[in-house]
Amino acid sequence: MNQLDQYRHQINQLDAQIIPLLEQRFATADAIANYKAVHDQPIYDPQREEAVYTRLKEVATHQDLLPYLSTIYQTIMQTTKNREQQKQEDLNHD
Ligand SMILES: C=C(O[C@@H]1C=C(C(=O)O)C=C[C@H]1O)C(=O)O
Image 1 (tube, rainbow, N blue to C red):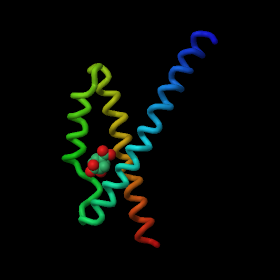
Image 2: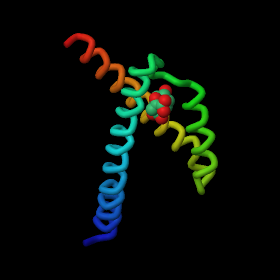
Image 3: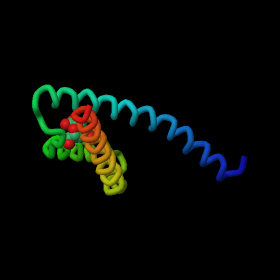
Image 4: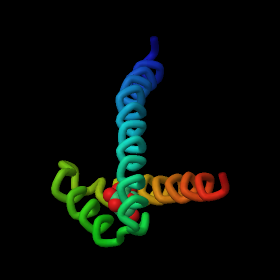
C-alpha cells in the first residue's frame, strides 16, 4: 500500500466509526421528534441549536477547526429537521 492508500484506509476506518454514530444521532432525533409531536412542540428549537454550537466550542480540541465543524453541524441539524418534518408530513398524509 502506498502512502495515499494508507491515508485513505485510515479515512475509511474513521468513516466506519462516524457513520454508526450519525445513525444513532438520527435515531435519537426520531425519539425527540416523537416526544415533541406528543407534547405539541415544534421540531425547530433555536435555543437548543445555540446550545449545540456552544457545546461544540467546549468539546472541540482544535479551535482552528471550529468554523468547519460549525458548517458540518449546520448541515447535520438542518438535515435532521428536514427529515423529521418529512416524517411528520408522511404520517399526516397516511
Ligand atoms: C433534535 C432536536 O430537534 C431539532 C434538531 C436539533 C439537532 O439536530 O441537534 C436541535 C434542535 C432542533 O432544532 C432537539 O430539539 O433536540
